[in-house]
Length: 152
Image (cartoon, rainbow, N blue to C red; front, side):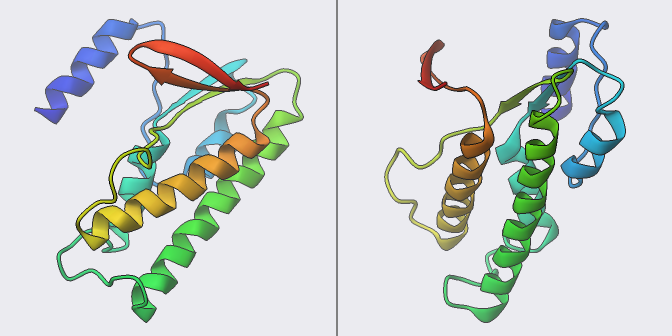
């Protein structure tokens, strides 16, 4: 099902788009491709966060909960990777030759999730979105297909 969704989105956007698929190293990809393009779309940061959590074993039923030393260390490592990405964004933001669009999901507007994995994800996503929004020139929230400018 996921492969079909991916193919649908590729077909929908047309073949004139170049697609780079990177599960973990967004900072490295940006560094490698920044000179090749005037516009870059990153879709989506929460998928990237999910990949980081899965890669670091934070999504299994046995994954450490809040207060578990291992869970806190792994979360700190993920936050370090997020900070590295935000630092790269700051560098790119000073380039007048590049327009960068970033898609993320706001997952903190609902009820508190009932399991520790989802709570950890929600907390990490919230902090990630705040850091990215802080360095962005403009921020939009899209609700029901309607973009609402909230910064810039």
